[in-house]
Image 1 (spheres, rainbow, N blue to C red):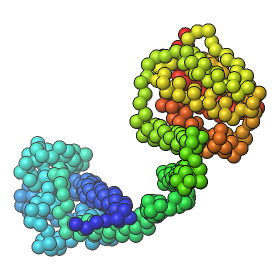
Image 2: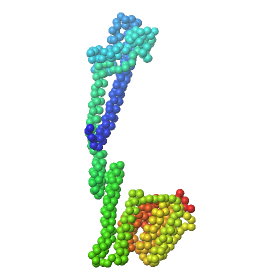
Image 3: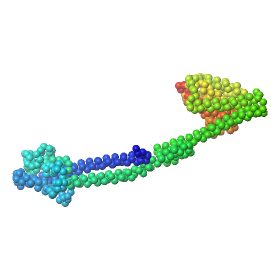
Image 4: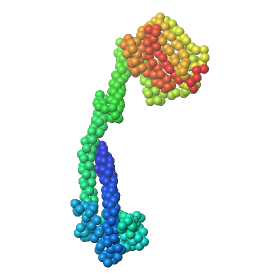
Length: 480
């Protein structure tokens, strides 16, 4: 089976459409030619009938009766031939005057058509409408022309309608016209084929560029881009492809950075563990409670990092368990504040709490929301200077509950705030393992909020630090 590429398929589709159109035009022209020319011949024959009726009237006047038809049967044929000579004296070979000489080669005419020659379709009736000359069934003729002699009707002349062309010259004329139509049709098909192939290549060119770029993209070249040359569907597809390539490029860069950061985060505590264990093995350091505590701290840091990675992985694949129900957000937030209160006050931080007096109901997992608030409060405690202030507020409006956690200095620049939810990202000033974590807490917080169909954003705090604003939909859109 022959496999055609897209260019050939588009070419054949365009060519087939043009061929169908041209063929329909050819058939319509053929039909119009046959019908129109036959109508034209019949109209000429009607004009000829006027002359024939006048000549028959004169012949009747000379004879005084229709007896001359019986005495000389060829007399009407001669009169008919004279009307054709008068009809087209300058053009005896014209397709509409083919009987002007009676020298038509009868061998060239289909015998089935001879009966439709003009003289064989003529009928002459006397004044009493009795047949005088012509076909035996005059009832097939609907219209008769009166024959006058000295103003008196002496007979009637009728003509059986012509159903198809019977003369060789007429047939040749129609055949020549049909041959010309066929040549024009063939020429139009050749022109359509000559135009269709370049047009198909032009239409498929953007698709080929996209196919080539996709091949490079699948091989790992995420920097590939497709030029956008139009504003049609191909242009939109090119823009979407470029956006996809940019997203993949960013994701690949983030993946490499993530692996490098994880390696860095694990290397330091493992190096400390290895060094202290080797020192104990070599006898350079005594095995004491102090050394064991130091080893335990490093193990705790590794365990915390692995646990955060596990939680983040579960959230990414949607496997993090959520047991949602209608809960009071006020109670969950107050419990989180009470858990963190001791550490916050121990860091000499002032805590301001603004809670509504009515319940704020949300459809959520209380354990995951508790994890969310614990992470955010712990983050504020770590990165707020001693003597600072943390404001925790909750309000509800327009079917949403909004939690505000604002802290005082140090602040974060706008560029850094957009990266706070990136994995393993930490502001340079906070890269201190004595106080800071691995940089996964806020990424986990964002996943928890998004799993509850909410939004979280980091803004500049009026107190000089960071303002974490979390929006969650109310249960049923109510805030009672």
